[in-house]
Amino acid sequence: MFSGTLSFLCMKEESDLEYLDLSNNLFSGRISDCWSKNRRLSVINLENNNLSGIIPSSLGSVEQLQSLRLRNTSLYGEIPNSLQNCTQLKLLDMGENKLTGVIPSWIGERLQSLIVFRLRSNEFHGDLPSTICQQQFLQVLDLSLNNISGTIPFCLNNFTAMAHLGSSTLTIQSEFMYADTDYTGDIIYLRGSLDDHLLVIWKGVEQKYGKTLRLLKVIDLSCNKLSGEIPKELATLQGVITLNLSRNMLKGSIIGEIGQFISLESLDLSANHLFGEIPQSLSRLSFLSVLDLSNNNLSGKIPLGTQLQSINATSYSENPGLCGAPLRECPGDETPNPPNTGNTKSDEESFEPLWFFTGMTAGFLIRFWGIFGSLLVNRSWRHIYFQMVNKSANWIRLKVALNMAKLHRIL
Image (cartoon, rainbow, N blue to C red):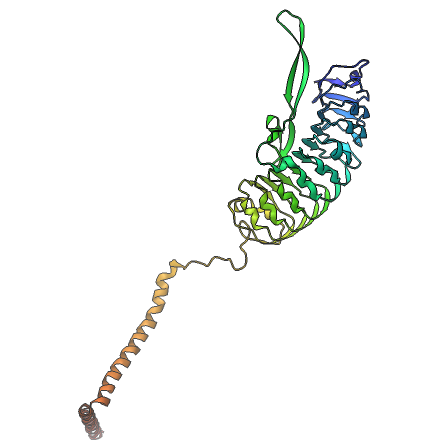
């Protein structure tokens, strides 16, 4: 690990240096404004140092520059306009600094070879320029953690590389000349190449991508002050793997075309002002493994889909009108309680008196109408029946009279 200043980069004569990597050191002070003698540089990597000051305008004289990495170096000020001369830039990473001002419109107009554009965690403000839509080769757009306002340009669907499915043929590979010795000990110059890398917040974790960088297609505009609705034109970018629009002031509903993001693995729309129902098409995203829709005003039933029900309930929290698995059940969807088999015996016992009296009443009515009906139909039976009744009545009266006489004699 080295320390000191970068004053040694100020060359008196034209340099053949093509690759400069001084990252992950303790260099301090300002970046010297003397890059005009390093016109052949294709890679400049000064990230993770203790540098300060502004970005020197002489960097714009390095016209063959393909990769400029100034991440995490405590730089401040604005992006110098001279960098628009670096038209071969494929990777521009100025994240984690204190840069200010607006995002220059010439970045979209002049730097049309960009594959990675990263200004994460700075102090940029103002609208997102619509000229950025001219970046046909762009695969990673990370402008998160700034103060960017205005609406999301609907023309972002011009990011042609993000519209293609699968791996991109684009690479961020830089060629350079280096010195070596042959078998005789003489110095020889050889040409080598290097695949660039990038640190990306992927599924909430910062991960490093090198040769697999061409697989990555990311849009991260989170933690800004963006307003308006989500443009439905974004859905044509079918190759996008990560879409993060969280912690803004977006309103309206989640676009019904969200299901067209068929490659999407991570979607974060949390902490906005979105309302309405979750589109049914969201359940068709078979690769979706990270979803956060919390802290909005969404309502209705969560669409049924393996991915949507297996995601943690916190991803849907703070949406008072939202219901369905994995949240509470929606009104009308309550599952009926199964019969209580533990009280079967008691229930049967409680029905026994009812069945007894019902059977007794039925038996009485059947016998009554069986006898009374026969008497009504058969005249001879009816005559015999009434004779028997009269005899029985006379016998009862006689018995009563005899018993009463006997009682009088006793008294």
